[in-house]
Structures are given as C-alpha cells and as structure tokens.
Image (tube, rainbow, N blue to C red; front, side, top):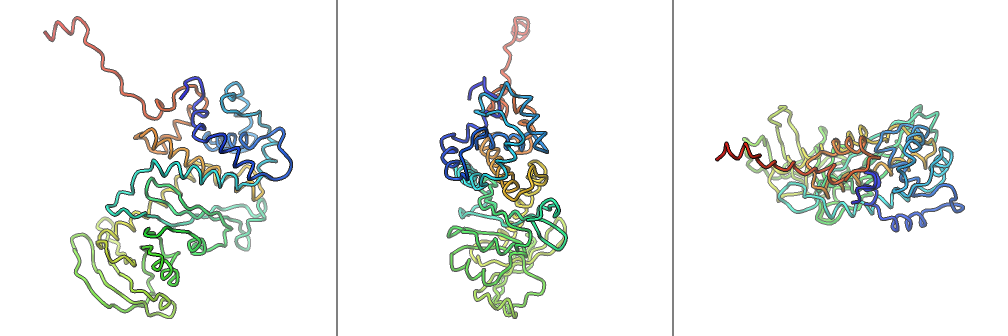
Length: 383
C-alpha cells in the first residue's frame, strides 16, 4: 500500500472501483447523477461511520477540513444538499449488494468457529432500533412508537453477519428466521423467540441441526434417558416427543439436555435434533450464542445505526447497510493483517488516523522494534 495516500484511501482499496461502479449502474434510479456520484456517497457515509459524525452538516464540515487529502479517495466535493438528495432517492440496494461482495471476500480469510466439528455454525437474533414516530412516520411499530428491526444470522467462523435483514418493528423474529436459506449440514442456535415446532420439522428435513432452549410450559413425553457426566454440569440427557396442543406439530424426536452453569448456578434446558454431539458440546454451542448479542452491542456502540442523517426509509436503510459494509471492511483488515488488536481497538486507531498519510499495515500490525547492537563500551564489558 502506498505511503503517500491516506489511511482511509488505503482502506477503501479493498472495494474494487470497477465492481462498485458496476453495482452502482445496476442500482440506479432516475436521471444520471451530475454533481454527486454513488462512490462519493459511499466514501462520505463510510467516513461518517468511521469518524463518528452525527449529522450531514457535521460530516460535510469534516470532509471540507480535509479537502487537500481527498484526491486519493476519488471523491468529489460533497455538499449537504446533494448528499441528502442521493441518500433519499438512490436505491439502498446498492449497499446490500456491496455487502454480499465484501462478505464473500471476508469468508475466504475468516478463521474457524473453534469447535471440533466442521459444520457451519450460526447464531440467530434480532435487535430493535427505536425511532421517533413523528420524524419517521413510515416506521410505525406500536400505537405511539416507531422502530425497525435488524435480523442477523452470525457465522461463528470469523463472527461475520452472513444473513442480514432489516424489517419493520412489528415483524416477529421467527418470520425472518424462516426466510433464511441455511446450507445443508449447518447448525443454527437461537433463543426461545424462534421456537416454531413446524419450523423444527423443516430444518430437520433439510439436514440442519438446531439448538434452542425449552419453553417452561412445553409438554413432552420422555422416550429414553442417557447417563450424563455430572461433573461437567449436565443434569439430564433424554430423547423426547412433544405432545402439547401446539408442540405436537413437531413430529420428530428431540433431544432434551439439562445443564447447570457452574458460574451462576442457573439451570438451563436445551432442545436439539442433533444426537451425535456430546451433551456438553450442545451446552457450549448454546453458550456461544452470546456472540450475536455482543455483535449487536458492538455495532450500536461503535457504528452509527441509532442516530440517522436522513428521515426517509431509503436514507435510513442506506446508512444501516453502509454500516454493515464498514463492519466487513474492519473484519477484512483484521483477517488480512493478522492483527492481535480487537475490532474496537482497530476502529479507535482508524478514527485517530483516518486522514493521515501512513502505512495501514504498520498501523494495525506494527513491526517489533529492531534490537540495538551493543556499542563499543558494552562490547568491552561483555568481553
């Protein structure tokens, strides 16, 4: 990477311009853009995510202050009115398509999920982003509240959000869960919000393993009991058939595993259709589901997906999808540089050096200082 270009410029080289321009042509609406390009929109909105800008005015002033360093970015001068207009009218699907491209590149470098089995492991969850109904009237969720939901299927290989969907706040988690196209042989873990006994049948038919928690009011019949290693916190390992009024829709045999967390003393009961893995492994898989909660916490704390620079649905969706693209850019940099830094440490470094002309590789993974050769006096002393 060139030392004469800025850190932001080096970072954006991960996105091939010819691929971006092709996607921009495919996702264009209306007349040809004159003063503002989609690339300028992307660079501006990505820099807003990385530098923590809170409004269009704040973002434009920040870019104007760096006007002499924007040449390497291929960025035209950005005005507030032009950026607002493009955010409002040009399809946000461009950044959803870019997200897919970046995801494919990240997956080639991502490490494994840490378990011994080789199957793909996903965690499903959703988070609600509250919106003011007076400002965002299209985001009607409840009687007097506005909201949208971000649904994520997190791939534990590299902690990458492989499945992302943005819906209105009224959409139930399981509705988005059913729409996921999980690959055959994969394993998916989710909480009680995704329990749908007919969906369990569908997952099993597609050779997809699942792990979830049992509802307290679930009715079932124990068919078989197996011995457990109590020293590992396990309390039960059973084969059951569901026989409640709703749970009877599940026509397959399930495995019921009881586990008591040695740290908190809480007792958990898990349901799965996987009878091959050890009961302790099933418990650890569900514990790993917490990674998707940490993912939501990270993006809400470090990226701009709660305060928006536009009020239309397209502007909001554009900002969220750009944020998802920026997350993948950060993950790609981490994988490529093999940096020991966390993503939070990386984004903090980028915020401080975004428009500095220095090597991005040295910034993320600096070389250890060279050992100084002993001077003449030290040589004599050693002799």
